[in-house]
Each structure stands twice: as C-alpha cells, then as structure tokens.
Image (cartoon, rainbow, N blue to C red; front, side):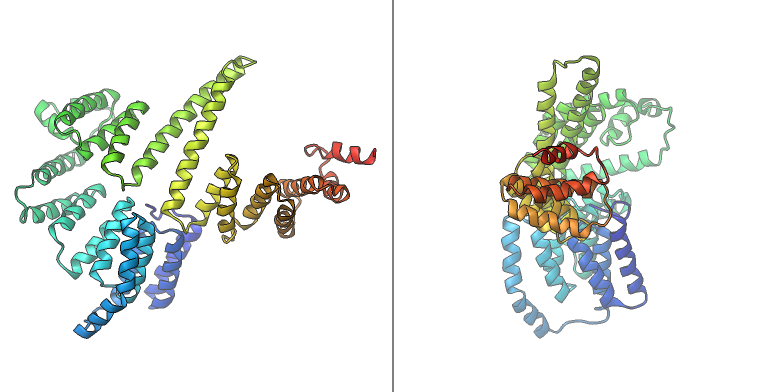
Length: 463
C-alpha cells in the first residue's frame, strides 16, 4: 500500500492537483485526475479515499427513488457477473476495476463498496479497506463480520480507540467470541505500552517488574528493545502456538521476531505456514522474498569478500548458484507485482528486464511491448525490445527497435553509444558490414576506447 511518502513525485503532484481542483469546485477535473492516477497506482490509498469523498459529496441531500434503484440493478447485472468472475478466480485488481466502474455510476452502491473493501483487504491495502468500510458504515449499518474486520484494520493502522469501540459493538451481537475478547485485552496491552514511554536504555523486563503483567504485554512484539527480550518472546509465543498452532497473529509476531533476530530460516518457515493459512494475503510472499533476498545478499557479499583474499576463488561455483537464486527470487517478486498491479507500466518494464536477464526473451518482449506506452520508459523499452529480438535472431525487427531509439536520442552519451553498438552488431549478423562500420565509426569518433569498436574498424580497413 502506498502513501504520500512512497508514491513517485509525479503521482503526488497529480494527487495534489486533484485536491486543489476539488477545493475550487472543479469536481470533474479532479475525478479525471484521480481515476487516471489510480490506473497506475491502484494502492495509493489517499487518492482512492479522495475519489470516494468527491463522488459521495455530490449525493448529499439526494436520495434515489425505488424506480431509479431498480434501473441501476438492471444496468449492473453484467458488472455483477464480471465482478464475480474475477472474485472466484481471486483476481482482486481486476475486480476492483469493475467495482470502480459501478461506483462511478452509483457512488453509494453498498454491494460495490462491500466488495471493494474485501478486495483491498485481500491485497493487503489496509488503509483503503479501512476507509471503504468507514464510508459503507455511514451509508448502511455494518453486519458483525464487517464490523470485526474494521476493528482489526483499526488495530493494524494503530487507531486503538476506534478498534476498541468497534470490537465492543461487535460483542453486543456475539458476546461469546473469545478471540475478540482476547483482541480487546491485547488492545489494552498495546495502549499501556504506547503510553509507557520507555527510555532507550531501559529493557522490556526492567520496565515491567511484575512478571504476570510482563506476560500480558508480551502478546504484542513490536515494542521490545533487545535481543534477549526477543528471545523471551519467541519462547513464549512458541509455547502459546502449541495450544493454538493456527493463530495467525501469534505466527506473524513470531516471524517478525525471528526476522529481527536474523533467524532467517525460522522466519521463512513461519511465514510459509502463514501463507497456507492466508493464501490471499499478498504481503506474506512479499515478506518471504524480502527475507530470502537479504539472506542471499549477505551470503554473496561474504563470498565476494573471500574472493578478494583468495584468487583463484574456490567458491566461484557456489557464488554463481547464489546469484542464480537471487535472480529467481527477484523474478518471482517481479511477476507478483505485475499480477497485483497490471496497469503499472514501471513494474511491467522491471519485469521485462528480469525476464531478459534470465534469458526468457519472449516473456520479456511481452512486458516491454506494454511498457513502451509509458513515456518515462519508452526509449529504454524499445532498446530492450531490440536486444531481445537480436538474441532471438529476428534481426530486421531488432534493427527497427534500435533505430527508433537512436532517433529519440540527441546526446552521444553512454546509453546512445550502447544502442549504436548493438545496431552495428545486428548489421554484422546480417553481413551488412558497410552499414555496421558506419555505426561503429560514430562511436569511434567520440570514444576510441569503447568496447571493441577500435578492433572492428581496424579489421575492416585491413580487408
């Protein structure tokens, strides 16, 4: 989920323009900006929340007649079917696009808001899910299940008082729910800790002398200070999980503690179990890949350090294997990002580069053919298309891609030299030596030492 500190500056500028347009009552322009922005950054929570606010503001003081409601339900039938098609296949991002189309026609449509909240929760966009449920609650009373979900979202966002009120409201309908009663106890612990103001030099155990109180507060692991504290919490959570092995909150806390203690293998094992329990939570595989990637980077750095000390290096094969594993993890994460954000052309470009590096040129071409639509990645995308077609032996198509890039570059910098060099290689591969020499000489005139250009030209002159 992206907030104002995480989105690129150009996206943030568009959001601010939309906000300013709304403030001067230019609603249509604001809505256009926001909808275009969300096509590229669908998890930009502030933008989606502003979209909801603007569309609902236009409905203030208005109510639809029974006939109007019936007409909308008829119009929405194909949208319902398409939405359910995506939902049954867990294509949350596609379902969101359909739901937004419905909300564009009827911003207060309860079904659409309910499903939007569900999809964003499945994608891990907690702030958007929370905002959507809050809006839905203003339109119609939330059923207990959604009230419980909203309370948990408040907990994740650190809005403890709102979480408490929502849990208590839920308990009026289901007073026997022990998990919610336990969540209320955890909330009290979190509130106590957040108000406690521990000193940097004070450890968790020193601050709380009463061991029973300490055990109660241990249920939340975010606030511990030292490795010893984390070790105590790990043992405590392991004991608790023996009685409730599928308790997802405890498993999350345990994985976090293992990660903080640099116990990567243990953290991954716990996260793998969480992934089985919560298959629709996109943040779990992301966390697994992050830990695996960091672990591999540490190993690679250690082996490279040994390489400097020992030449020839006895671990070169192991280093190659680690580099290969790292590429696989990056590729898996790249595919996951594109699956979640199919309209984000930057992610498509990055995935194309990962496919190219792994030698999957056809897959790379598919991504680059999408990313050329992004003005910022257009030139680089054509360049990589040229490289892919060259590798696959489609030299005439590769030539066209490289020529497109050359036409758009004015300065003879490193990138343009590289493009011209590969254009020359294409001409060599098709036995058009004179054309190849024309390209190589362009580089030779400004950088005689660039790659093997000098040797190629000398060889041509000796013929």
